[in-house]
Image 1 (cartoon, rainbow, N blue to C red):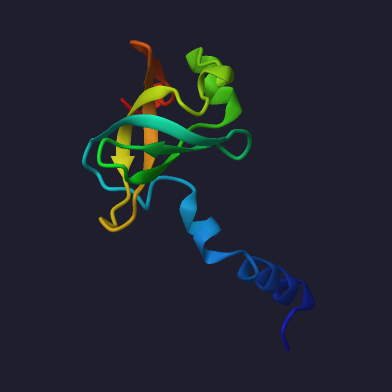
Image 2: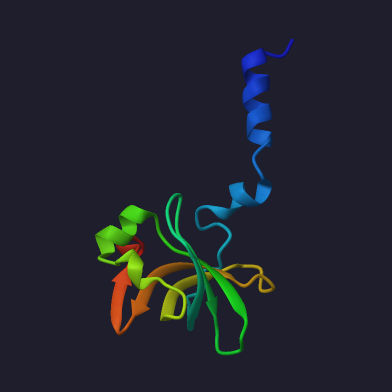
Length: 122
């Protein structure tokens, strides 16, 4: 007989969208360093982490995952600098799927100032 509590917990975990569950962390990224430069087109900040859309020089629209709000604060990155129309450079790791225009940013460069969101990832 199946323990009812285990069944409920398993059902709840199974209800999570696969993309959301796989999205967090670094497992979905390539090990290679990656730099994206372009113009911010969209912004969603907050928990569990910020997301911005960046249009690159070829007019491709990328999604970049930033840090949690506390990481932005610790790095000295003011959220109001992340606004549509702002030129930005992001350094980190792109998706291991080359068809997916998505990256995880470790460092953000705005107006020549570098903000290190993940200093522990040296």
